[in-house]
Length: 124
Image (cartoon, rainbow, N blue to C red; front, side):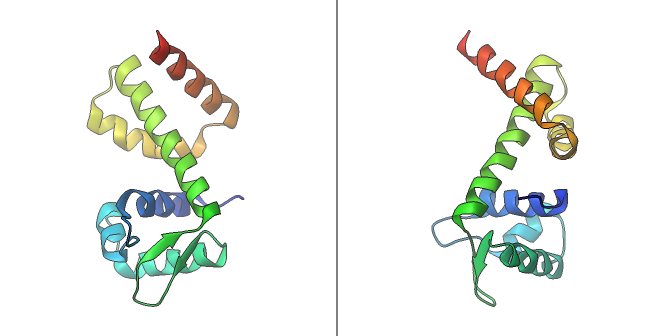
């Protein structure tokens, strides 16, 4: 399933802020630095795509497909950040910001190779 980079960020934020009771839109808004209205609009689109479940004014839960996609986005983000910090020596705060941008534009082939490189490095 193809969704916009912005919606990927919302999915990742839901994953990172959720607990056993789901994610609150307030927490997602705070994490992303956006308004609750923006979160509610994005959650509507994600619900339409079957990636989250929610009740009006209630918590947000990732569906099975939503969880898989959110975890994939999170893994890309964390791998790129680790690469930037540990291999290139980029400051952690800068690497966090850059990883958020890079994760949406890097090709699947390049991302696959970065993941392989970092996994091989971990095994050494």
